[in-house]
Length: 473
Image 1 (cartoon, one colour):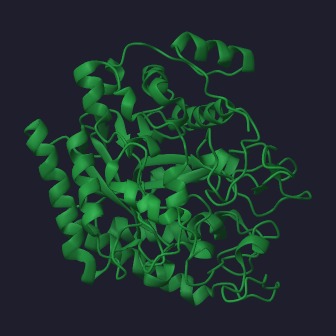
Image 2: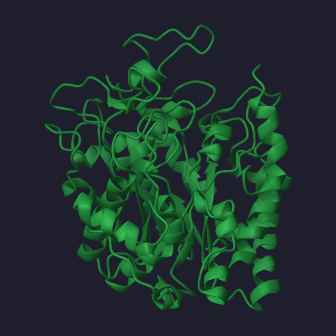
């Protein structure tokens, strides 16, 4: 296995970027991160964002549980002023795992407590939460729904991995049914009901999740689907557009946001030996089922449709966009460049700095195309203690509005406070991209069918959970 992160100084990482021909930039001045930002009618106190990191720790009926409350108290007390709440399924059958949050009347009291404790923790540390923005991500997991795959279109690259008989493990053939148009039309009501409930609970924004190959992302690429939700660009954006229009009309006080893939790419698989880099799956042109992807060269992004759709969403009232790449199950190196792969993954097929640079370059295109639209960038955690040197440079140069922190927020939810008070991070708690959190997300062999996820190396609460998860069923 190649070990890439051998950097002991900022100069060493700058040199590596130059040698790789990358455009990553770094500054020592973190002050650009601590300027207020306007998001719609709301003022946000800094440019630091907690990404929607799922804890897989809800109860079986979709209620937040004690580890969920703990995580959001820690986020609230940490100093980031944009807390992007994790995925909550709008219907039970759309959950990605049996411990994912669900937003419905039965879970409203628990979600209200989660929000209340998050904001109170912020007030306890900072005296006021007037400049704190907290939202909730609304999702349907589509082909990654845990009970059975709920697919919008057949995909020759993903179907062999995902459209399987859960009892036997056998791949299901092409006759596996697609979600019916009537079901998708009914989902509009489900999303609107969830948005209304989120607003009543007190969340200031909802995120219409369109990333990581969950249902709304899959529909964006559903060129082979027949009927009103597939084929043409207008049809492929129909469901998300209809949801946004209805929410804007029926919940006018709610800020609209979306986390959206800019580039899906194609699936990868493990190489022939344990130390071999991951390899792309077999493919043939044109690749018709990948959003933001050149159909003749699926290793290259094609931002024409993502740019068009983001522009249209801005006209529909979307005031905040969080950009991402790839598929956590099929191309994790695109989504979260890593040093150590997850147990069901593969060795990095490129230097992880190349993946970080891809995130930054594509996000910068979006931000510069829409300079008045706040954009949250991703892909930072691999940079470890140099994360915010890059983030501050990107904010300073107008390449991004918010620096989104995902995995790195689990061991150090107080990264904003560390930067503000000490001008640096606590090196003893810096995420090293060991992929323990992802390994826990993939572990299912307990009585709940899902282990809670966190950072076992740097958060003692998760060490016994990790020890249990390591024991084979």
